[in-house]
Length: 132
Ligand code: ZN
Image (tube, rainbow, N blue to C red; front, top):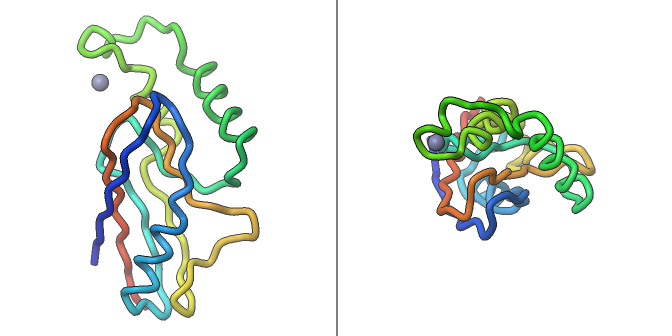
């Protein structure tokens, strides 16, 4: 099954911790054991797993800037956001987390991060649960 929740982002680029929203969906859908996929149906944001720490969030966005800045990107001829598309491509639009006992199996410092690269926008996040 796939459940969807929505989240408004508030700036052009930001890193948001969505672990709580995902964990609530997992807990409310009787998945004792299985796999949780979190994905976004968008081309200019990403989902990753890492520590939610302000300095690291800044570093992730700075890294993406360095990789995609100031290119003669052809997509900019359409809507001037090629950098956001390219960064989203490099980061990826989905992650998977095992589920055991109705809980996400994450490391101590691991959080599920929505990385906005072309906000502010209204983003949808899909949580797909597979039991087994
Ligand atoms: Zn575009």
